[in-house]
Length: 171
Image 1 (cartoon, helix red, strand yellow):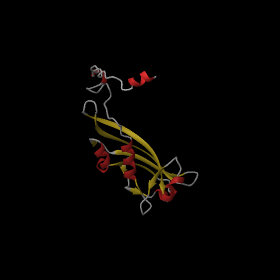
Image 2: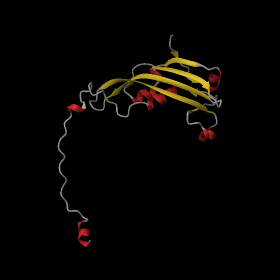
Image 3: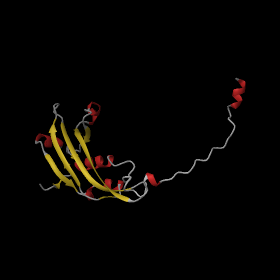
Image 4: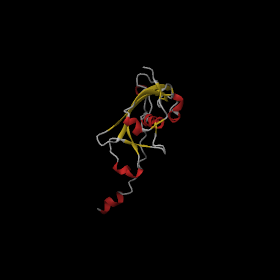
């Protein structure tokens, strides 16, 4: 089956009524914020989405995405390709005042004035959140792996008199 471009926005309630499933891509050039957080996005993001209703008749969107990005290794400062995937589950937040009563099973998705959610923004947010905090090669692939590092000796701190030694005498 050929992958197609996903729509930019979708009405989650209508999509849930139709039980829509999407299997498509988000072009790498549309993932601008992800590209700012990395060296570059090297391929389009593969995304699958399913819309449905739960037992409480809340519309929800379950999905997964995977992408490949170029990161900078924090040990050797060289670039490397990193492929990763994310899974997520959102429900539209139709009444912002009810955010405290929102079920914990879903992340709230903000809807615009037309009742639609921005799919690209949601997927991109999830991809950004899943980036590693400290990007590094595998030890075997990194030029500056932990095995090659040497550590010097820590100099002994100056031996200063303890300012509380006077209190010992009064005891």
